[in-house]
Structure formats: C-alpha cells, structure tokens
Length: 338
Ligand code: SF4
Ligand code: MG
Image (cartoon, rainbow, N blue to C red; front, side):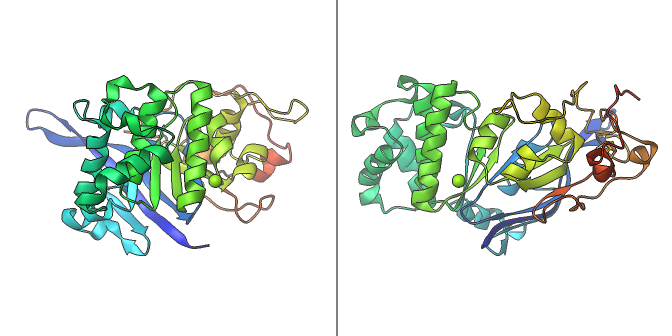
C-alpha cells in the first residue's frame, strides 16, 4: 500500500481579535494536532458533529487556509512548505467537492465554460482538445453532450453535483476531498452520486478523503474511518472496526443515534447529551469528559493518547483511558453531568 497523504501534527488555530487595539485575545482551536495517513486508492472518511474540525482539516490540507502548525505530505512532498505559486500547481493533484456546488461555480458560465476554465487554469488539457474533453467528462459523470452549453441553474441538485465532480476530474487529480458532497441531496440521488464516486474511483484510481456527518453514507463508502471530536482524533480504524466494534464512548454515542441495519446486532446505547463545548477553551484532559457517561477524575486531568488497546486490532486506535474497563463492563454508563 502506497501512502499518498500523510498529515502530521496538523493544527489550525484561528485568532480572535478583541479590545480597542484589535489584538489577538484568544484562538479557536479548530484542529488541534492530528496525525493520520491515507493510502492510494482508499476512501478515508472523517466523521463527527459539526464544529469538530472536519471541514477545517480538509481546507488546511488543501491550504485554502494555511495551517498553523504541522505538515502535510502529499505523494512524498511536504506541501505546507510550497510557495503559493507551487501550491496552485499542486492543486491539480488535490481537488475538493463541496456540499453546494452552486456556491463554488460561476452561475453566468455554461457547463462547458466551467470545465474549460478548470482545464485552462491547470493547463491539464491543450486548448484545442478542451471542448472534446468537456463532452467526454459529461459522459463520464452521467450527463449528456447536449447539456454542455446550459447554465448551472438549469440543472437539479444532483446534476449540479455531477458538474462539480466533472470539474474536479477535469484536471486529473489523485486525491479528491469530498466535503459533505452528498449531504444536501435526497436519499435516492445521494445513492446515485455515491455510486458514481465509487465507479470513478475504480476507473481513475482515485483516493478520497470523505468528510461527512452522515454515518449511513460513511458506512457505505469508507475503507477506513476517522472520528474527530473538538479538533482531535478520538478513534480511527477500518470501517467495520468503527461500525461494529467502536471503542471510544464518543463513537459509541454517535452510532447510538443511527438505526442498526441488523436488529439482532447487540449495541450499547449511549445518548449524546448537550452541545460540543467551545473550541476556544476546550475541556482539560479528555475533551469529551464533560459529555462522557464513563468519565472519571483521571479524565479531567490527563489527556488520553490515541493508541491500539489490548482488545483491538492493530489497524484500530482509540484515545480513551478506560477502553478495557468499559469493554469488560467494569465501568457502567451513567447519566452524566459535571
Ligand atoms: Fe470518557 Fe474518560 Fe474515555 Fe474520555 S478518557 S472518553 S472521559 S472514559
Ligand atoms: Mg471504495
């Protein structure tokens, strides 16, 4: 397995200005030191409630906002060290698809214009071949040639997302970050777009970083899953490890909220109470301790490290002090509030 993306110690802290002098008085610690890798051809999802740092992670990897700290290696190159000009060229390899493609495309441009512009910016296709490539791309994403000269408002949400996908493909990327890419679509359309993404992955050897709050979608599409809470990774593992054998109380709580496909499957129900605390002053120790039904004194003081516990496969890691005790039933979930 070839490592395509390696994120190491990534932090994204946004300054909060205050007072008459507009000095930085604090920081929103949106992403606070995360490390993971993505292998070629894989789909890795990042899940968590909104405000956990998922989208910020995607944006920092692409350097849409330069990260505060840490490195991002892409195909062996540290892209955090590239100049802005070099980074623009690199964007050919790393593309992003957003939830609302309409917000990121020019409504006064035809589909052909949108795709041609993407090719022109990256010079991925010679000028005299671009029209031909536009028609080919439309076919690849399930639209037809007659639609090339139409405007975005003439398309449905699902079709617009197909245009967004075509635009990403126009530059022959290796990695596509899908940021809530199907979240705004109806369930039946969602399935079609997910199937399309899977087909394209096969065909073009694509790697996906799939950012989503929708665990049903994530279960469908992922090879591996990263669970984030308040800017940190709390659990990471293969899809089935996360969905069938979750170890972190936060992951268990997230999964408690979705229906189980197999009703005979035993599942511990952990309610997720309250909101995500502020990322300006995150809780001490384990950041989940204010909402965790298993929290002990130690949890308030010492930050748990992400690692493989005794009862876990080597591919699976969780950041919780009491994985084994919870697993053995020695700690019972309680109605918890500090
Ligand atoms: Fe809960 Fe403590 Fe584990 Fe954090 S470390 S998830 S508070 S039991
Ligand atoms: Mg796949």
